[in-house]
Image 1 (tube, rainbow, N blue to C red):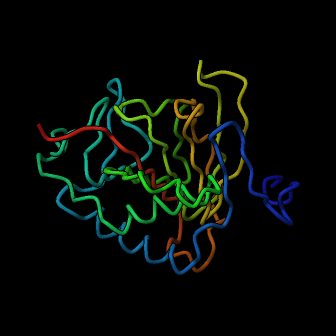
Image 2: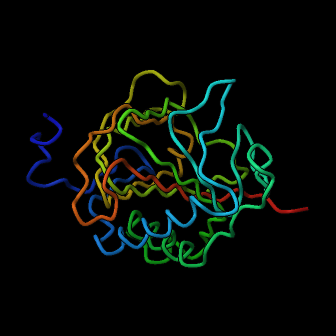
Length: 224
Protein backbone atom coordinates (compact mmCIF):
# COMPACT_ATOMS: atom_id res chain seq x y z
CA UNK A 1 0.00 0.00 0.00
CA UNK A 2 3.03 2.30 -0.22
CA UNK A 3 1.62 3.87 -3.37
CA UNK A 4 -1.27 5.23 -1.27
CA UNK A 5 0.78 6.64 1.57
CA UNK A 6 4.04 7.63 -0.06
CA UNK A 7 5.58 11.07 -0.40
CA UNK A 8 2.81 12.14 -2.77
CA UNK A 9 -0.03 11.30 -0.35
CA UNK A 10 -0.55 14.90 0.81
CA UNK A 11 0.21 16.59 -2.50
CA UNK A 12 1.24 15.33 -5.91
CA UNK A 13 3.10 18.20 -7.50
CA UNK A 14 3.23 18.96 -11.19
CA UNK A 15 6.51 17.56 -12.56
CA UNK A 16 8.64 17.54 -15.66
CA UNK A 17 10.15 14.04 -15.66
CA UNK A 18 12.34 14.76 -18.66
CA UNK A 19 12.52 17.50 -21.29
CA UNK A 20 9.08 17.58 -22.92
CA UNK A 21 7.53 15.06 -20.51
CA UNK A 22 5.16 16.68 -18.03
CA UNK A 23 2.84 15.17 -15.42
CA UNK A 24 -0.10 17.31 -14.28
CA UNK A 25 -2.10 15.61 -11.48
CA UNK A 26 -5.85 16.12 -11.08
CA UNK A 27 -6.26 17.99 -14.36
CA UNK A 28 -9.71 16.67 -15.24
CA UNK A 29 -12.57 17.40 -12.88
CA UNK A 30 -14.81 14.56 -11.70
CA UNK A 31 -17.63 15.94 -13.85
CA UNK A 32 -15.39 15.88 -16.92
CA UNK A 33 -14.28 12.33 -16.09
CA UNK A 34 -17.88 11.14 -15.79
CA UNK A 35 -18.75 12.67 -19.14
CA UNK A 36 -15.76 11.11 -20.90
CA UNK A 37 -16.51 7.69 -19.37
CA UNK A 38 -20.06 7.91 -20.74
CA UNK A 39 -18.65 8.67 -24.21
CA UNK A 40 -16.18 5.79 -23.87
CA UNK A 41 -19.03 3.35 -23.21
CA UNK A 42 -20.76 4.56 -26.38
CA UNK A 43 -17.58 4.24 -28.45
CA UNK A 44 -16.88 0.76 -27.09
CA UNK A 45 -20.20 -0.38 -28.59
CA UNK A 46 -19.77 1.59 -31.79
CA UNK A 47 -19.19 0.46 -35.38
CA UNK A 48 -15.87 -1.03 -34.27
CA UNK A 49 -16.26 -2.69 -30.86
CA UNK A 50 -13.56 -2.59 -28.22
CA UNK A 51 -11.10 -5.45 -28.65
CA UNK A 52 -7.70 -6.77 -27.61
CA UNK A 53 -5.20 -6.33 -30.42
CA UNK A 54 -2.83 -9.16 -31.30
CA UNK A 55 0.88 -8.35 -31.32
CA UNK A 56 3.28 -10.99 -32.53
CA UNK A 57 0.54 -13.60 -32.33
CA UNK A 58 -0.26 -12.79 -28.70
CA UNK A 59 -3.41 -11.04 -27.51
CA UNK A 60 -2.80 -7.92 -25.46
CA UNK A 61 -4.27 -7.79 -21.96
CA UNK A 62 -5.42 -4.23 -22.67
CA UNK A 63 -8.60 -3.67 -24.67
CA UNK A 64 -8.67 -0.81 -27.18
CA UNK A 65 -11.15 1.25 -29.17
CA UNK A 66 -9.96 3.95 -31.58
CA UNK A 67 -11.19 7.26 -32.91
CA UNK A 68 -10.20 8.94 -36.16
CA UNK A 69 -7.79 6.24 -37.28
CA UNK A 70 -7.75 2.57 -36.31
CA UNK A 71 -4.48 1.37 -34.81
CA UNK A 72 -3.35 -2.19 -35.33
CA UNK A 73 0.23 -3.44 -35.19
CA UNK A 74 2.02 -1.49 -36.52
CA UNK A 75 -0.04 0.88 -38.62
CA UNK A 76 -3.10 3.08 -38.85
CA UNK A 77 -6.04 2.55 -41.21
CA UNK A 78 -9.41 4.22 -41.50
CA UNK A 79 -11.20 0.86 -41.42
CA UNK A 80 -10.75 -1.76 -38.74
CA UNK A 81 -9.32 -4.38 -41.08
CA UNK A 82 -8.38 -6.68 -38.20
CA UNK A 83 -11.81 -6.55 -36.52
CA UNK A 84 -14.89 -6.19 -38.72
CA UNK A 85 -13.82 -3.92 -41.57
CA UNK A 86 -15.97 -1.00 -40.43
CA UNK A 87 -14.73 2.55 -40.49
CA UNK A 88 -13.87 3.93 -37.07
CA UNK A 89 -15.72 6.88 -35.59
CA UNK A 90 -14.52 10.36 -36.48
CA UNK A 91 -12.22 12.19 -34.12
CA UNK A 92 -14.47 14.62 -32.22
CA UNK A 93 -13.92 18.38 -32.30
CA UNK A 94 -14.25 18.65 -28.53
CA UNK A 95 -11.31 16.29 -28.13
CA UNK A 96 -9.19 18.48 -30.41
CA UNK A 97 -9.97 21.41 -28.13
CA UNK A 98 -9.18 19.32 -25.06
CA UNK A 99 -5.87 18.25 -26.57
CA UNK A 100 -4.91 21.84 -27.26
CA UNK A 101 -5.76 22.85 -23.69
CA UNK A 102 -3.60 19.98 -22.45
CA UNK A 103 -0.62 21.19 -24.48
CA UNK A 104 -1.05 24.70 -23.09
CA UNK A 105 -1.32 23.34 -19.55
CA UNK A 106 1.78 21.17 -19.86
CA UNK A 107 3.93 23.79 -21.56
CA UNK A 108 2.80 26.92 -19.74
CA UNK A 109 2.72 28.66 -23.13
CA UNK A 110 -0.74 30.05 -24.00
CA UNK A 111 0.01 29.69 -27.71
CA UNK A 112 1.56 26.21 -27.61
CA UNK A 113 -1.66 24.46 -28.61
CA UNK A 114 -2.48 26.65 -31.60
CA UNK A 115 -0.96 24.25 -34.13
CA UNK A 116 -1.80 21.04 -32.29
CA UNK A 117 -4.54 19.10 -34.09
CA UNK A 118 -4.72 15.46 -32.96
CA UNK A 119 -6.51 13.22 -35.44
CA UNK A 120 -6.55 9.90 -33.60
CA UNK A 121 -7.05 8.62 -30.08
CA UNK A 122 -6.38 5.18 -28.64
CA UNK A 123 -8.67 4.50 -25.71
CA UNK A 124 -7.30 1.64 -23.67
CA UNK A 125 -9.19 -0.16 -20.92
CA UNK A 126 -7.16 -1.90 -18.21
CA UNK A 127 -8.74 -4.38 -15.84
CA UNK A 128 -6.99 -5.33 -12.60
CA UNK A 129 -4.62 -7.74 -14.34
CA UNK A 130 -3.82 -5.77 -17.50
CA UNK A 131 -0.33 -4.51 -18.24
CA UNK A 132 1.40 -2.62 -21.05
CA UNK A 133 5.00 -3.53 -21.83
CA UNK A 134 7.65 -0.91 -22.49
CA UNK A 135 7.20 0.49 -25.98
CA UNK A 136 7.58 3.59 -28.13
CA UNK A 137 4.70 5.41 -29.81
CA UNK A 138 6.37 5.49 -33.21
CA UNK A 139 3.71 4.43 -35.72
CA UNK A 140 2.89 8.09 -36.42
CA UNK A 141 4.58 10.14 -39.13
CA UNK A 142 4.28 13.28 -37.02
CA UNK A 143 6.50 14.05 -34.03
CA UNK A 144 3.81 16.18 -32.36
CA UNK A 145 3.33 15.47 -28.63
CA UNK A 146 1.22 12.65 -27.24
CA UNK A 147 -1.49 13.71 -24.77
CA UNK A 148 -2.44 11.05 -22.21
CA UNK A 149 -5.42 11.18 -19.82
CA UNK A 150 -6.21 8.70 -17.05
CA UNK A 151 -9.61 7.88 -15.54
CA UNK A 152 -10.42 5.23 -12.93
CA UNK A 153 -8.03 3.10 -10.92
CA UNK A 154 -4.53 4.36 -10.24
CA UNK A 155 -1.75 2.81 -12.31
CA UNK A 156 2.01 2.53 -11.94
CA UNK A 157 3.43 4.20 -15.04
CA UNK A 158 7.02 3.55 -16.08
CA UNK A 159 8.64 6.30 -18.13
CA UNK A 160 12.00 5.53 -19.61
CA UNK A 161 14.60 6.69 -22.08
CA UNK A 162 14.58 6.96 -25.89
CA UNK A 163 17.26 4.30 -26.46
CA UNK A 164 16.02 1.04 -24.94
CA UNK A 165 13.47 -0.59 -22.63
CA UNK A 166 15.82 -0.86 -19.67
CA UNK A 167 17.11 1.70 -17.19
CA UNK A 168 17.17 4.59 -16.73
CA UNK A 169 13.43 4.82 -16.12
CA UNK A 170 11.17 6.19 -13.42
CA UNK A 171 7.96 4.81 -11.96
CA UNK A 172 5.19 7.25 -11.05
CA UNK A 173 1.52 6.89 -10.19
CA UNK A 174 -1.11 8.09 -12.63
CA UNK A 175 -4.40 8.64 -10.85
CA UNK A 176 -7.88 9.44 -12.09
CA UNK A 177 -7.95 12.83 -13.77
CA UNK A 178 -4.20 13.02 -14.37
CA UNK A 179 -2.67 14.47 -17.51
CA UNK A 180 0.66 13.34 -18.95
CA UNK A 181 2.15 14.94 -22.06
CA UNK A 182 5.33 13.83 -23.79
CA UNK A 183 6.85 15.47 -26.81
CA UNK A 184 10.03 17.10 -28.01
CA UNK A 185 13.12 15.24 -26.81
CA UNK A 186 10.87 12.75 -24.96
CA UNK A 187 8.48 12.01 -27.83
CA UNK A 188 9.98 8.55 -28.49
CA UNK A 189 10.67 7.61 -24.89
CA UNK A 190 9.85 4.02 -23.94
CA UNK A 191 6.96 3.78 -21.50
CA UNK A 192 4.51 1.24 -20.10
CA UNK A 193 2.09 0.28 -17.33
CA UNK A 194 3.43 -2.19 -14.79
CA UNK A 195 0.48 -2.38 -12.41
CA UNK A 196 -3.14 -1.41 -11.85
CA UNK A 197 -4.22 -0.75 -8.26
CA UNK A 198 -7.81 -2.00 -7.86
CA UNK A 199 -10.23 -0.07 -5.69
CA UNK A 200 -8.47 3.29 -6.08
CA UNK A 201 -10.89 4.94 -8.54
CA UNK A 202 -12.80 7.93 -7.13
CA UNK A 203 -16.41 7.08 -6.39
CA UNK A 204 -17.74 9.74 -8.76
CA UNK A 205 -15.40 9.35 -11.75
CA UNK A 206 -17.96 7.27 -13.67
CA UNK A 207 -15.92 4.06 -13.74
CA UNK A 208 -16.54 1.43 -11.08
CA UNK A 209 -13.45 -0.66 -11.76
CA UNK A 210 -10.41 -0.62 -13.99
CA UNK A 211 -8.69 2.23 -15.78
CA UNK A 212 -9.32 4.09 -19.01
CA UNK A 213 -6.34 5.72 -20.68
CA UNK A 214 -6.84 8.09 -23.60
CA UNK A 215 -3.85 8.92 -25.76
CA UNK A 216 -4.30 11.58 -28.41
CA UNK A 217 -1.81 11.66 -31.28
CA UNK A 218 -1.18 13.40 -34.59
CA UNK A 219 -0.68 10.68 -37.20
CA UNK A 220 0.59 12.87 -40.02
CA UNK A 221 -1.42 10.68 -42.39
CA UNK A 222 -4.04 11.47 -45.00
CA UNK A 223 -6.49 9.37 -47.01
CA UNK A 224 -4.62 9.65 -50.29
